[in-house]
Length: 598
Image 1: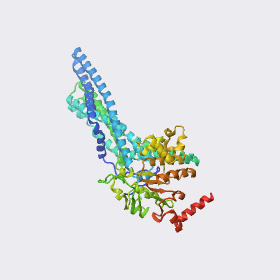
Image 2: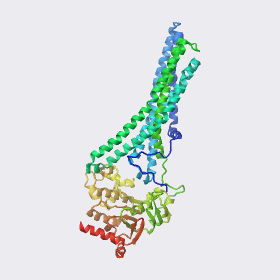
Image 3: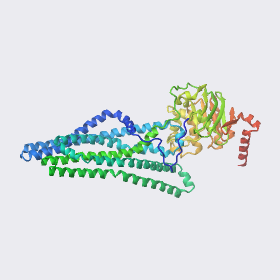
Image 4: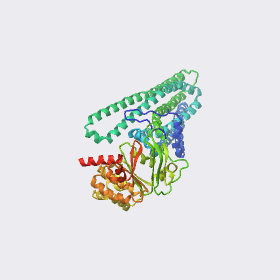
């Protein structure tokens, strides 16, 4: 198992695992590939529009050098008519270009956003445990959105400007190749200027992306913990922390923008200097002999030449800026799932529920301490196994390994004699019902939340599951019953009600192996009595693993494992362990005395 990623907080800047390389832009090409046919139509419209626009200075030259001196009104009206037609063609081509390329760009962004979201679904718990969720969220939303202009208008404007540049140069060389060379004499200065700014700009936007990520992480953390903040009257302290993080972002933003804006004045000044040079060379006839019409046409072409160069410079600016965000996006896409199907994995056949741990050891980090050490046990189909012990002893780790949320470090886990590392994750987890300690309720109706594990379940099946866990009573007393809309994380419900809904969700899939991690921790005693009645019927015929703080809830378990420091120190039935007066007896006795004193 690979080591867990370095832990990170909102106060720490993230470090890139590897430096950016230009092959990342080749990877962008795969998002463009499905839309190549539509893009070719857009390119054709751009080419037609550019030719129409470029005709303008040439028509002006013909009018000044031929039609006006010869007083040829017919030719002049013809030139005016052609010029009007070129303007109309250019207008409609550009209008189509803007609409089409915006749609293509947004389609590309949708595909990229889907890829990164779907990839996140496959990453292990360790990835989410090691960094604030706000720093993950910003990659799916903000960083992708930052690329919006680059991949839509920016990309097509680049192609348009390149075509315009090439067409302009063709016309310029056709009219006077010497003046054309004079027009390009200052280009090397521009390239040197862009090269000097490039690295500074990329580094500045790398730092900016870190500060933006930190700000987003703190906002996300503050919203999630708002009840604690208000409960301890720490609003002023939270505001001060936000101000500090926000000021870091503002300062970094201003520095990055200052570097970014340094390119544009350089390009603009070089363009003006080139225009002045052409006037000087043309008027003084230095190595060239040009007519007035040719000189005026060339000034028009100089603008047509340098405007695309300026735009390409701006695109280059955007490209360097986007590089900092692309690095983070592709870094996430390149994150390797620690838990994935083996190349030869097969679907786990319908199981009976025979579970065996053979000398299983586990640690979260490669150089970290062992969480489980040489754990071995056998649970036959239909048996109920209770896991008890102090906090941090390794109880939840046992069920996390059984569900393959993590891979074992040593040893093996077998279900019906099959090593779970050899089967597909989907086929394994579809036959297990898991209710973890952290109950999560999605926004939506109660019906949808219970149906989450079995989307094709009927309303009658949902209600039946809710009745088993005694959730039906409180649900029917709500205004809209099972169609009551819940807020994110079920904030309008009590902790016990949220757990009952999550329990019904687990039961609905009718699993052969049932995992309950602190399933009744937040349920009051009276509710727990009702729930226990449903559980007793449910557990028949299913292999179940139950973690519970209240030892009274697991007295009827077939086997009780006392886990301490990652090892099973005692095992047996409730009666057997109580008779041994060992660790389980001490736990039970301490809890009983605590309840008596309340």
